[in-house]
Length: 200
Length: 200
DNA sequence: GTCTATAACGCGATAGAC
DNA sequence: GTCTATCGCGTTATAGAC
Image (cartoon, rainbow over all chains, first blue to last red; front, side, top):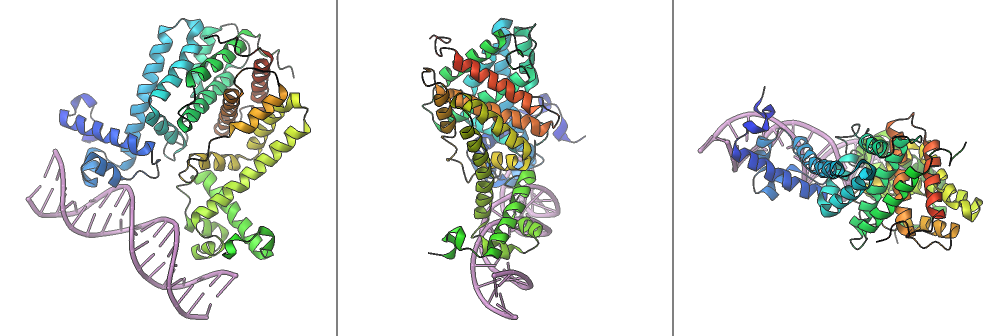
């Protein structure tokens, strides 16, 4: 197998540093230029090296962008998972919502990178199943609930995205208050008996 | 002024037909190729003419894409506005949610086009204020409510987007039931006294 | 191990024939 | 009014010098 596939622990310190540097440059470029506006030349320029040098450390431009995407995504899920695990099951949904909104508010460039990746060509068909972990957290908070937790999780995820997007366009927008409002709606929904509110 | 800026009523019938044809081709290409994957050559190919001919009818590629975007957006707001105006004020939010989800479900290519346009470079800073019409509908449904209707409108919009996106990835997903669940959550929130649920 | 030079291609847009 | 031919630029990726 090629050296590109070795475990990270086997990489030299200088190569790990280079990769980190390239990933950070890529995150910034994608954040305020979009995926399409991010070229090898600009990545190389920002990192202070040449295009060919970039392609020495990564096999292709797509690989650089993919690595950058994984980097920011890992940071997000690590923080949210820690917050949820530190909370009681009943307040798991609130911890999920508040920590995710907080993380995205604190790292706006990561946010742009993540949303860009979701729309992009490369990761077109992987987006599914994002709702599943949240549905499990909801289930743990309310084991006996009958209503559709998948749809509830989808609505919550969409609400979080929209709140964060609004803050991206209007930095004065109070995401903490918005998070509280979303938490209140979710807890009210979880307290209802679910389903009987929408007889068909 | 150039002929490009004449009113649509002054265009010849053949030119109007050509523009329609080009817009339809562009909607399809953007829908399943993304903005970046849509080139003048492909638009021309799908319409059966040449690149130069496309640029005769529109001043630039961006103008074609912008026209296509406006086309699908106008269709959406026309249907939603009609549904909301046909409903009692109290059921305005429900009409908004159901008609928008229904329209996007019925026109998946329009959906992709709209989401693509929101992310794209061209329309970067125009996205704001989307929540405002919905906030007015919410206000009309519940004039005395104290809580933050802007945030509620943002959450609803995000929920709608997420439901539609889920259906895009999983055609078996029941958007009508999801719409019902979202409507129930919103009506419950509007019935509460708003704000007292999240004392700070 | 890293860089220079360049290949090979697709892009949007234009000039000018017809 | 529509087409052919082409320009000039930016792109990813590679070959080979050092």
